[in-house]
Length: 424
Image (cartoon, rainbow, N blue to C red):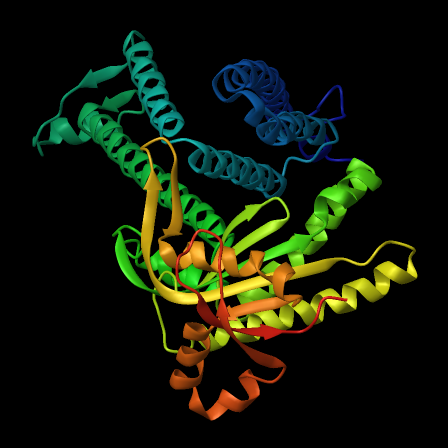
């Protein structure tokens, strides 16, 4: 015969011990059932509170809430099957603790205010529970102080005794813990926000500068802040005949062609430690020597210009094979002093270079049509490149031809230049 104290299915226990066990078991089941119902009701209220407080974050907590409700009813259903050992009860207690910890960690990760609210809500609920317990007639509810007499000990051993100093200490510890956690959460959120801002700033800088320079600027945030004069190599890259091509292709094809052109120029400029200053539609302005100048800037500008033509020639081979017209580029490069810094208003600042060197580089690019060359660079650039990198002077000038007394639009004096390649 099955033992009713372990199975609970014997409707008429025969011994006093069995009847007592059966009665305890029935009360345990009733308590578990009531606890499961109360838990479900409490979780429903908490669900509404979280939805109002956190909005879209509500869906993160919903699985934890559902599991918490399921845990309560599962414990009750296990008891109906006759499982009365402490093992399965402890297992459900562990499940509840894990779920509560997950919920608390999720709460901490979201908002310091939510953490403070949860802590204060717990303190209020705990205090309300103490007040409620104090209303029971049998409750021994006082402040014991430091009385170590026999009366104090007997009162302490009374199961109806409530120690105020211990309960107050628990409330104070909870408030302190809540404040510490809320401070930690607020600090963590601030650090995360700062990291996001730094990442965004670096992303913005990476649009203009090579990744290595962008990292340096992000660390030393004063690099761009001071307006100054320095020697810089300035390059203008123009897509020749762009207006005519715009009339013969669809807007989508035009944009695709521009993007492909920009990508190739960007890759070449960044590979040679240059800075993308601006995109003017089919014109690109790049500089070498910003934000900080170096001895290799003029040579880098020459290498970059040649690389752009190499990339364009490869691109044109694929375009012609696909039935599209070839793209022609013209480049002008000059080296000299410019003013570097942030220009504009408080609402819109822009890093830029200005000065006569920029104007001359633009005019050199225009002059490629007059001299029938793909690229025109100033003698100042060539002198600086061969002077600062003498070990590579001969290689830098491969394909270049000197051209004397070139007249530029808007300038009174002619200048000596070097040409590269012929317009086909």
